[in-house]
Amino acid sequence: MDSKTILLIEPDTKTREVEALLLRFFGYEVRYAATAAEGLSRVKTEGPDLIVTDAFAPGEGGTRFLRRLAQAGCDTPMVVLTAYPLEDLDGLAGTFPCEILSKPCDAATLRSAVTRLVEKDVSQPCFVG
Image (cartoon, rainbow, N blue to C red; front, top):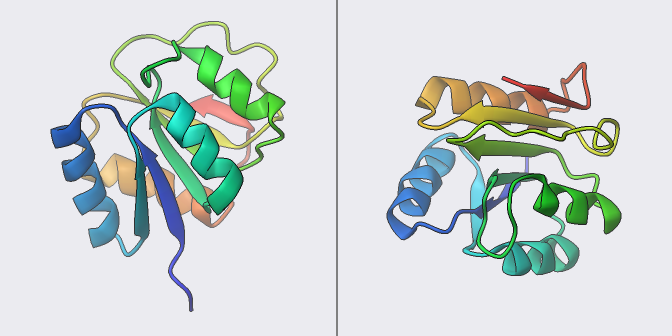
């Protein structure tokens, strides 16, 4: 079986390294982006199986980046990590499967969300986990 690819969009280098280490430990191939623009470009060119992103990736705030992905036709499942409440999720339902997890997020919660989304075992298009 081929390894699934995750695009990790995280501005903080140390956080990105820790998250990537965990995702690799879970058995996934990990690609990186430090900004929303770089992430959007990689989504279009690389077609990852899953996106793990900080909700406030540099260059975009809150749901603006998620909306840009939806407008670009992205239907890639996504785990959104945030230390702040996300509001204004209206209009995103049905665009792509996603889970919104609060930071800090423990390894078991992250693994569960990633596994569900990679295996496309989701019941709702976008929900808070």
